[in-house]
Length: 414
View 1 (cartoon, rainbow, N blue to C red):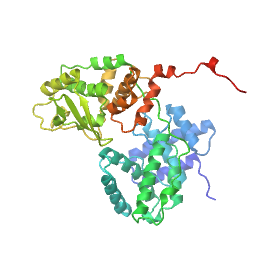
View 2 (spheres, helix red, strand yellow):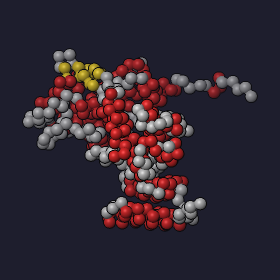
View 3 (cartoon, rainbow, N blue to C red):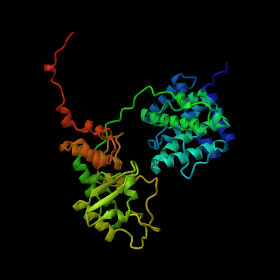
View 4 (cartoon, helix red, strand yellow):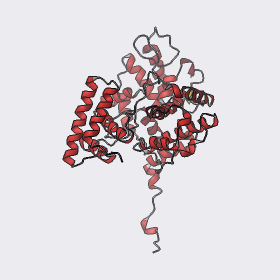
């Protein structure tokens, strides 16, 4: 039986592997410093060997961080220590360093899997997945492909149930939502491989089922007066303020998704019928929204006095510096709402999400409180299934109070 390495020995092995992989001297020095802090913490705790529980304790104690290894962004100052904990955990399990981040400039497919991946991409395109949905699915899949390459798997036919099981062990720390999404993507891909002759057996049945069901959290919402304060804080005397005010109104008043706002074209505005036509990226359906009075005036002000006259882009909203292009596909516009939240002096409790999507949540909750039927809210938000909208029922405190039982009216049968 192979001897278990102590945390100090494990750290040394990881540093050796980083050197072999040609990490820069500065990067290795940074990793070494963090590993030394981890070793000191282990000594203080009387812990000799690395465990996932120890890793979580270290991050919680030193950085007040509850980890979700698969999230796109981390609390400030925690990304590197989280990476160090994962390096120790991954190397202990598999004796390899697993890449956790897919480069935005483009993923380089390992040659042994290139044909299968290219065929799968074509399959996704033929199923008419949205560009965003397809990008997300592939990114989840690339983590698995990288793992196979690191394990020196040379063909899709060499994938085994044991390898799948070992890979799942590397992601079991993720939250329920991330875990569910990754396992689903993996099942679909493995099923595709079997149906198209890339594997001899259907390995999708080897992907374990999730032990815990994912319950969506209660959506983060704003107080209506805070939404107004945030909008009022925008300086509409300059082009940037005019653009940002129009964007935030579209989300706050109509609930249009940030991705759809970025994709709006000038031709999507029908001033005769006072309507906005939106090709929803998430659902692939066409939605129609009214140009409300305040939204109309905000758009006119932006188009006449804010949008650069030299701009030839067909997109409605553009960057205000040359060459006046549309927002990039990875821009989530989060900085816009953050800027004006701070300007308005609005306090956001720690852990609460306050991105543009939270304005959609607020609109849905407000409509519920006003007695708007759920199917109508579903249509306004552009959901295909009313189940997606039902989560907002948990934000309607007034409605929930009406469902409360009177304890005195409940009989107990012992």
